[in-house]
Image 1: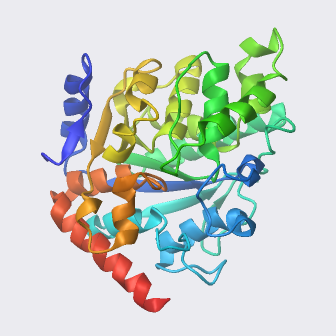
Image 2 (image 1 turned 60 degrees about the vertical axis):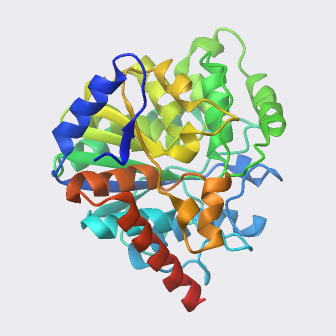
Image 3 (image 1 turned 30 degrees about the vertical axis):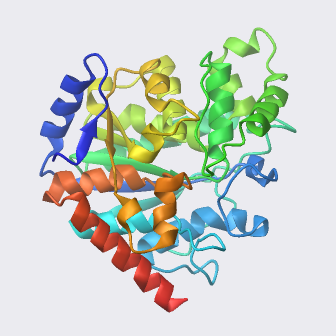
Amino acid sequence: MSDIKIYNAPRSQIRGQKFIDAVKGKDFLFSLVTSYTETCETPGITAAGADPDFLKFTPPADAEFLHYGFCKSIDVIPMTPDGKPTPALLTRAALESADIPHVVINAGSKIAPKLPYIETGLVPGKNIALEPGLEESAVHQAIDYGEKIGKMLARSTDCLIIGESIPGGTTTALAVLNSLGFRFNVSSSMPNNPKNLKDEIVAKARKRLELPDSKDLHKILANVGDPMIPFVFGMLSSASESTKVILAGGTQMSAVLAVARRLGYLQHNTALATTSYIIDDKSTSLPELVFSSSDSPILYINPKLEDSKFSGLRAYSEGFVKEGVGAGGSMIASMLKTGIDSQRLLELIDKEYERISSSK
């Protein structure tokens, strides 16, 4: 398991190794939470979607690619015009390699995926620069539904992996984190992180938070958040009571942990898992952000995409995309279940990329 790294922080190595030992060789279940915030429609805020008009199709297309190996909502694979693929490609290759089952949960996506999925009835989030992201009642509903679904899924696995697909989600995550008192930059799907644009959006959103609302977590989530954050918190809070949980992602999952710190979860049953591209991102500091709000360990993996045969995949190691659709957590889970190493996983990822390239 030398390809799986534990971020070196006080007590984190011990907690991380205990987590790894507890789930090694066990059964995993991957859950993909699809959602949406109209904040992503701000020009220049995200690399998701080959075209701005297709942003709303990104979450269902990710889910469909994960499920079928192709998309039904759109007639193309989610990929930038110059060939950088959705991180769902990495996730699919990892889950297939270890025969890890998955479930899709629609928690506020504008477009429902064309596959069997769990429907929550949550509405998409609004553009937080212009108006509150959610009704406060929707925040309570998201947490409640997340708790119920998390509890249900936890019963069927030794370790529940939670990934997400929500374009523009790092901006709403930044707004939530800032409103909770955390002053860190967050990551981006682009190599040149549009920090100034994100800060401008967050500043506009936070103007709506006047005392005493600025101390009320539910009002914070309603004003500056998106449906995914409270929903995944609900899943984490209930699932961690009975099984291990991997939050598969970076910035958005750190926002979930910040909320969980206030509302409660079992930290020793939880780990955040991501790629080395997020850990090494010089425009942010995910470890500081996570450890300022949680004692849960950070696990990460270098997928060695710089050694890929394809420039679209090598771009991940150059700062594009970096993470998403639970890619880091799913690759770590594959290694923990089967013992596969990163070199073999890269071969499978390259093979999957070759398949979709030849079918375009």
